[in-house]
Image (cartoon, rainbow over all chains, first blue to last red; front, side, top):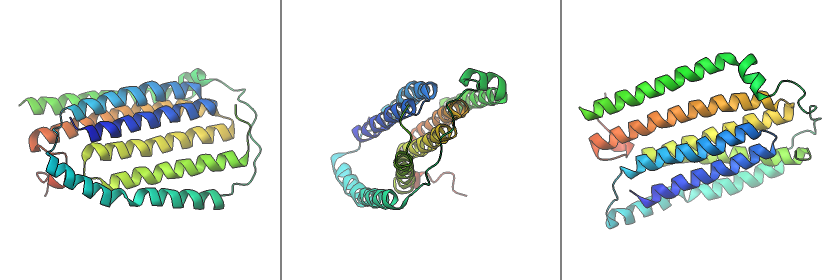
Length: 142
Length: 106
């Protein structure tokens, strides 16, 4: 198991948790709960399980990798800082009037009545995922 | 819940765009399957936040939440299958560096 990948996975989980807080503040508590439990919890578990099968590299290769990674990623903070500053200065959205607070159906009504076809799609996607994993690991056993 | 102001949405949009840049950069630069998957996750998170923000602006948070829940289900399936593929690739090639996965070259 490599510590660097575990760090990346923990960072992703923290990002998910922050996103869940933002979603809650944006009046979407159900999506926030899904984000926190599924994305921050379950996906982290999946990633950590995958990472646990990887092997730690030797110290010399780690040193080389660190140098390579620094060479690759040194540009990212600069790009982020410059893009953030530019966007904050130049991105001006015209002031708009917010729609009235939702008086229509709530999430349950939307899911079960308006977008019920999505549920079939979700079931099909879940089944496809299950079959995909079964086939992958069946091949791996051979 | 938050007092609406154009400035706040500007900040949210900036945050979403920065998340996009981070995800794309991570996918483009890293030669590690798991790191690339994490970059994809960051991209999906930016899209999720964009949908929620659009729902909040339009006052249709319920519809946005329904779409986000669908998105999360698809996301988890993609991650499980991609994690399985990464595991499979490591098992057979002893590496998760995409440059060395040359068995599929045609």
